[in-house]
Length: 95
Image 1 (cartoon, rainbow, N blue to C red):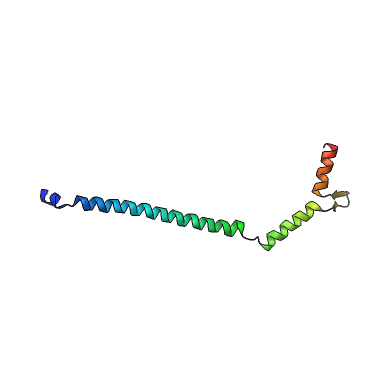
Image 2: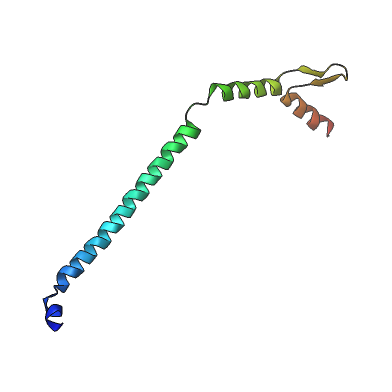
């Protein structure tokens, strides 16, 4: 058994071990970079890119409802006024 221990090249074993540790670290960094790139691409695709037509039309309808006069319930006499005008009235009347 001592002959087998004497034949071991500890320098080569240490070198290979260090290289494997460095290679593992580099591989971890590459996978992490790949993940963050994929995450950024998904964010751009889902958040930053132009909105769908359905969403754009819904937003336009909401903006129109906020900024126009209209009758909400004719029987009850309920009307809606633009949000800017409503805020002015609240400030003026102290509601």
